[in-house]
Image 1 (tube, rainbow, N blue to C red):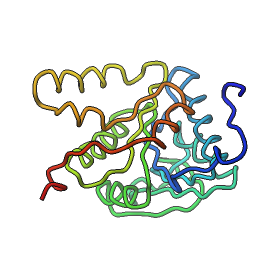
Image 2 (cartoon, rainbow, N blue to C red):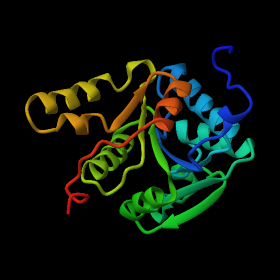
Image 3 (cartoon, rainbow, N blue to C red):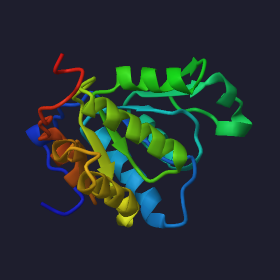
Image 4 (tube, rainbow, N blue to C red):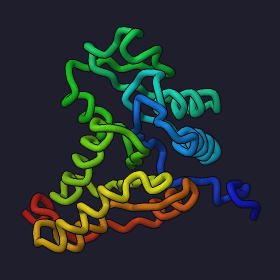
Length: 205
């Protein structure tokens, strides 16, 4: 099969109906970041996967949401009322759900998604990613959490996770919560095959 293409047939069927994507409201300095957002959006369209995201049309968020919407899939943008003005977040593509604050935003995004993917982004992206990882560690959910490590963007963060294991703050099994890949197709494949590790404070009660 030609690299970058998805074959027709059963391979196009996904176990996920909706994926929540965390990513930057900027495009970053490398074209690889934008390329990855567009590629993920196109693959979601091919697999008929709807998108849940943080709303707005700026940066990588805008690229993936417009791609998924233009491809005929549903897009849900969850955005706090304080960020609604177009001069702050731009126009939101697809359905817009305004919420009171960032906490409600994350709660709605979590409820609506079958899985999560983080693309390169700033503090907000990393905070959202770490929260769903922590929830998985606690046994609050068993949804796959994927990290698209475009051009090694997340290498330093992954090294910090490894340091946490080495120093005894993170269980080795919990280190494997995050599904990591350098390409979109590899990431989706790994997430489709993901089996949650047996752990979790909440789940053990």
